[in-house]
Length: 457
Image (tube, rainbow, N blue to C red; front, side):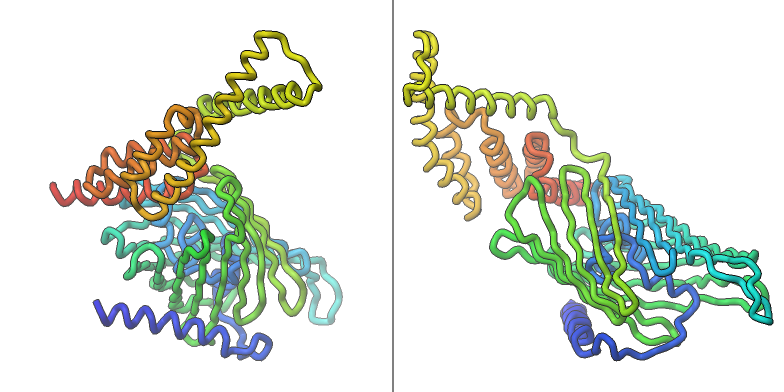
């Protein structure tokens, strides 16, 4: 185990050092290799913003770099990206993944690279119409969690098709990959072997056989100052070709949980990149720009998650309506106290009750802050007791209800009562479907519960 830890740490250091030691413009020139387009582009706008350093990342688009990466989602996910290229060229991707049970996930990826129309000439240089080149790739992915919290593995079965100037060819290949988390969820190491079974394409006379490609990557997830940070690095080593590297940084600059914003920067052997992403509920919008020597390239992506935890939309709407009603009552009371509006006796009684309620709420504000601090300090039982004291004034408050459910879930986790913990986490997500901590903890507890059940059997 110690050797594995040292190996992983060494890879991270090497990746980072490589990214900074290699000058951006002064790189080794080569003629490329067959199928290089399957490593040159990113399958999602998020990965493009991180300079395609995606071997250790997770999500539906991860199968493009490492088939083990699709295990990271506990819900279905579909991502779409379009990337206009030089001279009317275009790269597109559609990636879908869905978990079947707690340990198995399947994915389907479609990739398309279109060169745009080019002029066809004869041996005398005379124009003879035009032609284009199109490359297509279909990836069928299967991933499995091999060790709880430690090892994921995946395999791609891929079908490739190339057509150009009236000629076409089809090839078949296989990729395999793993992801390891030796220090927990905050660190991920990925290793992928592409073209284990190499595809070969023959358009007219010569046959192109795809080389073995070894991809390694590391991703470090940090939480600093209530904000998320992601550092990732990649190294791609094609057999017989020069090494490609990549390095990326993702930052969540705000503390907002209702509309998470992420800013991304990256660099690799051929370009710089930057981008951003916004998440709302089950949807994420991403954009990335790659600053290449020839021009700036843009990537646009959409990610949709489905089959997620259920939400009580009607309850949330009712709670929001109550908030609006309270604000209207408060506004009327303020006008009454300023003499701008004189209420009748019934309204006067309403205002008096509202005034008393406001005083009670102010008195419970200190208890609310105390409950938040207890939770942050992991004193979950004290948090629950504090919320119970303020219950008469916090019953209709969604945030208080979510915090109460989260604290109860943490207590149940401590005593290994995972069934009740899941019920409390489900309640938290139903009240606030955008609560990221509740979602992640729900997925984690499900995995632990499944592991215990499998162990008992």
